[in-house]
Length: 205
Image 1 (tube, rainbow, N blue to C red):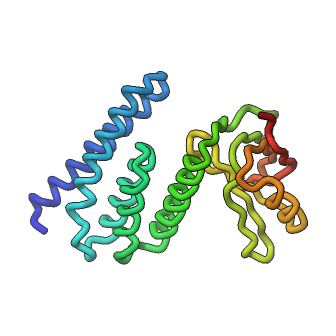
Image 2: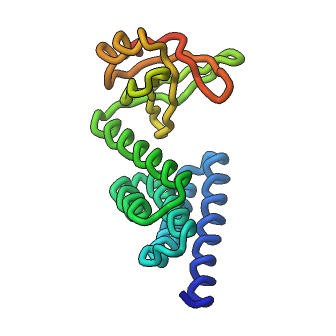
């Protein structure tokens, strides 16, 4: 790859990051339509950068990082199929372990969003709670009992945010069976970087 090509790719990436910053600022200012347009422009620019290095597996970690960034923007724009393709392309190369794990987590987000859209659920995002306490309203769409010493559930809110709660082993079966894919209200408490489940119940309609 020539220096001119690398310069062009860098330009696309920097443009995408600038547009993304503008989109976030517009969102904070409650200018949702403007934010949507800016996010889509950022996606178009970052996608160009990612596709330009797709056939150059030797350009790691740049190759996988650009694909991860483009995939995240695709998720932001609701382009789930495009996000899947970008993630698959990145994982088909040799991304660093840390980036590969981030790509898998992003793919998990895509799958959760798809399921929420299919359910047609109208959820509410995380709402304020007392100090050290977290309350989330959303759909229970994931449970993990594969680790002997750690069981988790994940709640997906309407903004696509995924909230992971640690649960006790004896709680998992009681939670998953009656509340799977249901709209729930979850209360947890912060414990270091983790959230521990305190209470979960079906949300009122």
